[in-house]
Image 1 (cartoon, rainbow, N blue to C red):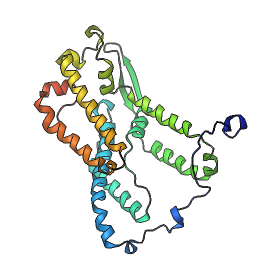
Image 2: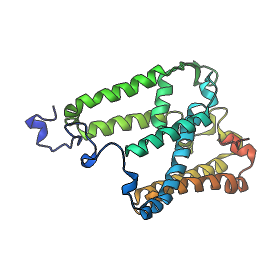
Image 3: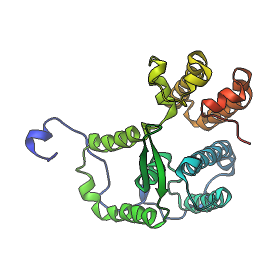
Image 4: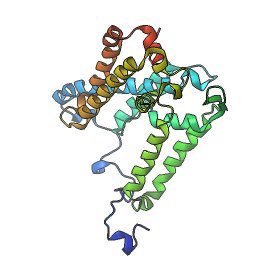
Length: 269
């Protein structure tokens, strides 16, 4: 459809994909480490440390959100094993000069929700998770289908970029449901009588809830501005680490543990 004359005249951009599977610049699969100057290896140490921190936090954020208590998962967690597996995969990809990978939060959460059975609780007026089908088969099948798209490189070049952007927008909007941060923003001006019985506004007041939400908005805006600047984007992992300092040492000076618990941000024990 995008190649039809009536549509093509609008100049809708499409995916830029090669006609065949190949490595950048026609290089060999394995990276020749001896060909890299020692000075360059040392200079790569700083961004490597930052990327290591980013991988650690991104992976742990993804698995901890998936393993949260509300999902009622039966299989025990294996955070250390996850990090060992991630390290080995990253090591192999580095020797081959291929893109790294780690836990993808959006895709992981959507996968869990797709495998979740829930029921509506009339007393609380909310959906409650009753069961999550825990299997590795779906994960393997998803990645197998992605692998099969290598045979469709020529076809993928006709896919409009707005379609791809729409898919990611759909995934992001779907995850907004149940997000307490966004829910608190929308509930700022709602009457107290229309709020749920366990809403933080009813427990700690509207002023404290608004203050906590404003701090979160400021941190999110700072992260976004830092990441959008090409000159500072490489230090993005260190900024995420700074958020941990804000939560651990600054917020407890303005909020009691009871208030943080009511806001859904209890201090880990």
